[in-house]
Amino acid sequence: MPILFAYTAVSFFIMRLSKVRLKLACIGKKSIYVFSHMNSRTKMLITDIYNHASYRNTLFLICNDELTENDGDVKDIFDENYLSSANILFLDKLEVFDFVKIVKKKQKQFVTDICISRNSDTNICSCLELIQLYRSQANTENVHINVFSDDCDVDAAIIDAGNDAATSIRLIKKEQLSVYKMLMDYPLYNALTVSQNNLLHILIIGYSKTTMEMLKAVVWCGQLTNVVLKISVLLEKGYLDNFTERIKLYYPEILSGEYDINFSECNLDSIDLKEHLYSDYADANYIALCRDNDMENIQTGIQLRRMFYKVHGDYVYEPFITLLISNDALCQAIDNLGGQDLDYKLQPFGNEASIYCYNELVHSKLEHLAQNVHLSYSVITRPDEEFDSACKELKNKNARRTALRPYYRHEDKRKSNITAAIHLQYKLWELGFEIDRTEGTDDYSELTSAIHSKMIEQIAETEHKRWAAFYRTEGLCSVSVEDTLKEGYLKLSKGCKSELLHMHPDICEYSDISIRCRKMNRSDTTIYDKKLIEMIPYILNDE
Image (cartoon, rainbow, N blue to C red; front, top):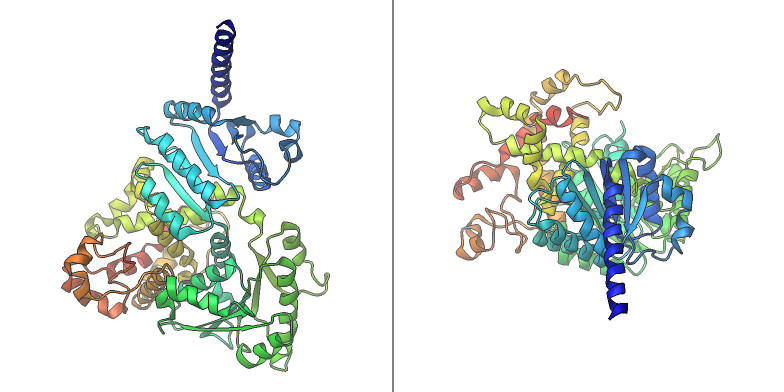
C-alpha cells in the first residue's frame, strides 16, 4: 500500500507538472503546430516555418507515441540547440488531450495539426481522433488540420463523414498537389506559339502515381477557347491495360469520346521511344515526364530535347518539357545542366521542398484564391442591386470567416474551387492579360472592360466545359432529366447531384443547361459560369 500510494502521488505530480509545462509553453504563442509523427518531412516543414515565422510567437509540438519513422533517432534529426531555439516540445497522447483543453480557452491562438505519417491510413485515423477531440468545442475556427493522403477519393469520403464540426480540414495528396502547382507555375498555354496557336498537344510519359493525376488535371485545365486539345499518354511497356482499365472503372466518361486522348506503350529506354516520337508525337508541344525515378526522368528529358530538335529537320522545334523530380538537390542541379552556355530547357516539378514548406501548407496562395472563388460563388445568386454591397461585406473579417465555414466541409467542393482558382490565369491569358506579381498592381479597370466585352459568353462556355471535365475526372457521369426526377434518384441525391451514384445533370453541353434546368424546376445554373468571369477582379483583389 505505501508503494502504491507513493506511485500514485508521483504520477499525479508528474501529470500536473506536465500540464503546467504545456500551459507555460503556450503563453504568448500566436501560432502552434502539432505534428503526428517525427520524420525527415517533419523537420523540413518545421525548418521552413521557423525561417518564415517569428520563433518567439511560434511553438512546435510533436506527438512522441510513434516518434520517428525510418529516419533514425530524434537526435539524428534535430540537435539539442535547434530543439530549444525553435521551441519544440514532445507530447504523448494524454498531453494532446490537455493541449486541446488549453486551446478551448484561447481562441486567439492559431493551431495547425499536421497528420504527416508516411502511412496514409495512419493519417486518416489520426485526423478522425483529432475531430473527436475538438468536437466538444463550441468554436474551432482557430484550428486547422492538414492530412496527408494517398487515396483522395476514399479518404475524402471518410473525412467528410467524420467532419460535422467547424474544424477546417485540408486533405493533401502529394502527387496531386505537385501537378496543381506545376499547372500554376508552368501553365499549359506556355506551349502555344505563333506557329501552333490553336493546337495544344500534351504528351504524358511514364507510369507512376503522378501519371494519373497529370492526365486528370490536363483534361480539365486544357479546356481553352478556340484551342484544340489533344492528349497522348505513353506508358512503360506492360502497364497499358492496367492503366486504361482503371480509368474505365473509376473515370468512365473521360474515355467517352468527348476528349481526344490516345494511349500507347513502349520500352522508354530503347529506340522504340524515337520511333513513337517521330510517327505519333512530332507535333507535341507540352510534355510531362512522370516516370517513377528521378534519374530516368532526367535521362529521358535530355533524350527528348535532342530528338525534338531533329524531328522536323530544322533544329528549332522546342516543346515545353516538365519532369517529375523528388530530390531537392537534383531539382536545383537541372537549372545548370549543360553549363552556362547551354540550356536543356527542362522544368522540374514535384520536389519535396516545394510541398513540405511554409508557402504551401501554412500560407498557400492557391488555397487563398480557392477560398476567394468559394466566396464569389456564395454571392453570385444575390440580386444585382445587392451584389456590390454583398461583395463589400465579405471584406469584413467576421463575415468572411462565416462564409468560409462550408469551404472545408466537403472535400470535393473544396477541390472544385481549387481547380477553378488554377484556371483563373488561363482565363486571364485568353483575355490578353497575365498576373503581375509585383506589389501595388491593383488597377483592374482594363481587365474589367475586357471581361465585359463580347468574349464573356465564349469564356463562360469554356468555364462550363472546364467544370464538366473536372467532374468527369472525379468519376462523375451525366444523367438525363427524366432519371433525375425518378423517386429513387431523388432519395440518393442532394439537390440535383448524387454523390453515391456519382451523377450530375449539369454535365452536358452548355447550350442544353437552360432547358434542363427549366424541366427540373431549377434556376439557370449558367449564371455561375458568367458571374465567375465577372468576379475575377474581386477574386484577385487581395492578392
